Length: 140
Image (cartoon, rainbow, N blue to C red; front, side, top):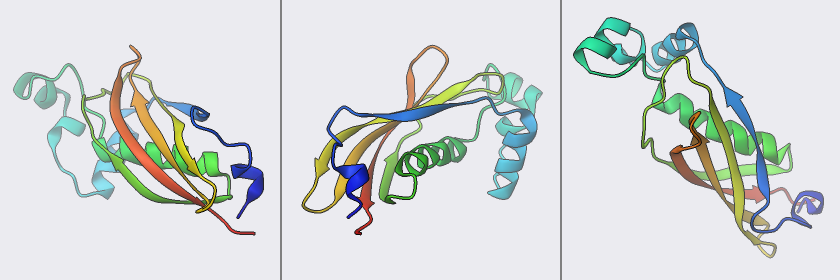
């Protein structure tokens, strides 16, 4: 296994995060790629007046993809993500900046794997998308 990544890994180690501030175009294009035509993702009057949201809602799967990106970037070629579970608990809106991140929950050196907590936080610091991931480190 790739001992350089797993050797000193311990529970509590942080995954580096990243800030995201998508605009209407990115949100629209993401929804279009998924064939998600729900108007809350691109139509401000509909999102606010009909659905009652304070703004255009960021696509939930896009937030999940940012969790994946967080793990893949942290692995930096030393392995692969084998499992991801997450739940969109609270909406995020265009104009907000959200941040991905995580931490190591457990390490199994015999199996060459680790279990991670991952999350997306809003500007207030609330976890709006909690999740877990499992990674397997490459054998070398």
